[in-house]
Amino acid sequence: MALGVVATTAVVVTEVWPDGSSMPVGDLPGWRQVFTEDFDQDVPLGSFPGEAYGDRWGGYEGIQDTAEHGTYSNRRVVSVRDGVLDMYLRTEGETPLVAAPTPHVDGQWGGQLYGRYSVRFRADPVDGYKTAWLLWPDSNNWAEGEIDFPEGELDGEMYAANLSVGHPGVFDLKTDGLASYQSWHIATTEWTPSGVTFYLDGEKVGFSDVSPSTPMHWVLQTETAFDKPPVSSAGHVEVDWVTVYEMD
Image (tube, rainbow, N blue to C red):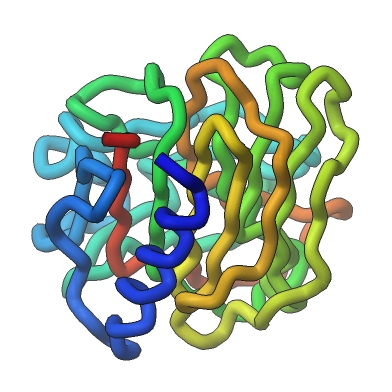
């Protein structure tokens, strides 16, 4: 399927979602919907994913984050209430607590080659924390690529990025700052053999013709930024819904 056809469809579909809209359900031209999550069952802090979400969600637990300041823990950070997943970022003792919820498509971690990924989200401007919501190689081999959107510090602006295959840590594309985190946004990443396209609230904001060609998995990696956050820094990252599609 031509990438241009997919991009046009994505813009039309996204533009008809008003702020506060319901999660989109159903296939799109060229895309087959394989995962949806509307967070319709409440789960208190300390119990995620638990019985309610355990067959559809996983994540890192008890390991250091990228900057090695925080500790990932769905159990200590993530809850669900009133249709919204909430990541409560804060410091307990001397440890900043962060989370990296991971959707399990068809009940499995990883294994998807190419896809379309959408998420509706917002966040408080929490000093010292960031998102790096990414597609990461199942092999854990950074040289196979990395796709990030949204990435950025929560008290700044988000951007989209695609890293060069074969050159770990080297950007092929990094957009300018696109928007702050405080309002609700819909971020969509389309990954095809022809390249990677990014949309924010229905508007195409970036394209790279560098495309990873090995299976990857999607992680809502929410973590400390570059320096250790102030102990007093605390706030919330909220996710309204997520959807995942495979190429048809």
